[in-house]
Length: 202
Image (cartoon, rainbow, N blue to C red):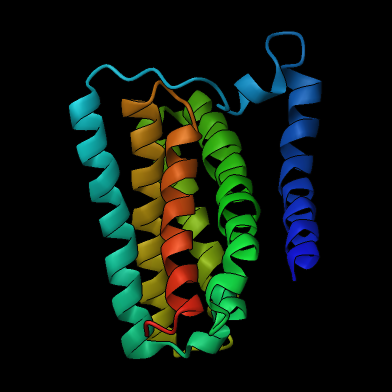
């Protein structure tokens, strides 16, 4: 299972980074490195106290509603974290690869690192952040469209849009454009879901 998780993580990173890398290669290669271009750079935080309050607040906002929706409306077998159900500590390493690398890093690279920054450059922060968060929400809705009732899909999309907007906001407004913040928040939220599956919390 560890090897499968590593390979899945590597495959998804490659898949999600191909278009951004090609775009950078043809448009910005001479201006800055690829990693800086997508926002994979050192955090610069002006007010650490407020930053950490927002950091924790967003984790709660992302985790609690989705946990409630999962409990009330979703069959946990359709969730990506289901692969860790009942594994306990045996699922620890695969869960870390899934949460931190496969989903956390690859999705932040694509949505907040590539799409948000390109849309921001074209339309400004507010419009750019709304567009990338809508795309983020729609993607999550499409993944569940054939498994759950339409009303629940709409609810999932709305929550994912809200999550995507907050992740973009904290990166650009509180982290000097670094995607490290949203990567950490996204990873922690996915780890919580994975740990709940591993130890049959729900």
